[in-house]
Length: 251
Image (cartoon, rainbow, N blue to C red; front, side, top):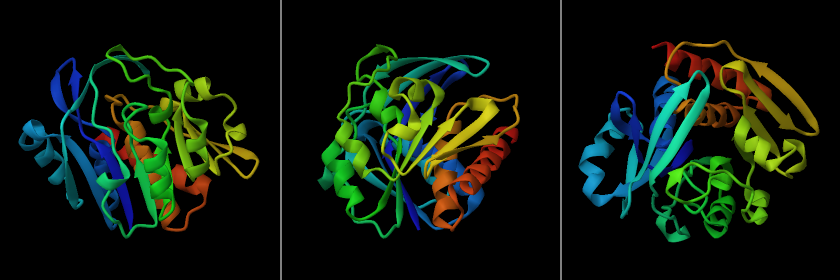
């Protein structure tokens, strides 16, 4: 079994608001894959009845952790190029906020740098193989136009088994092979991804799909750890994840 952990968010798109966050978009991949999984998520208590049912309807069992603030982001796209503005920040997770999970792999989906402190990730790593979305390292936790920088505690990297990065996040962090993480997967939007593992790099191609790509990275990360948990190697898991994302975009 695998688990997805992270805050729900409100995505403010050009056509109107909708539920977002890594747990929601990851759950869409889990719905397609139909594998044993659990989701642990949170948002402000006053937003629970509005946001949580959309996640629950995707079918993966959900545990809600009471929150105080719901993250919110506005988006515009020009092809694969996304412009993003931080409207609200989400809750910070402490080790006590995370319930006991019988899962070999957990994917942590932060929406900003402050949400998952080193001590919380370290506590997870003592019991699970941890996959982390790299936006939780480089996103500056402030309101306004999204900014990325490398001013994070590098100690967190030694607790991570898989690090998923988008191109712009990899540009901030530098050479993926030099980060000291067992597996690093860099996604290149509609062009595919590159897997760095064991001193080698393998490119996994994708084909462009004319659809809103919001959440594709979260779906990719969830499908990737499903593949790794089922016994696929890193490149095989990336190929499976690429196919899952394409199928979601084509719906």
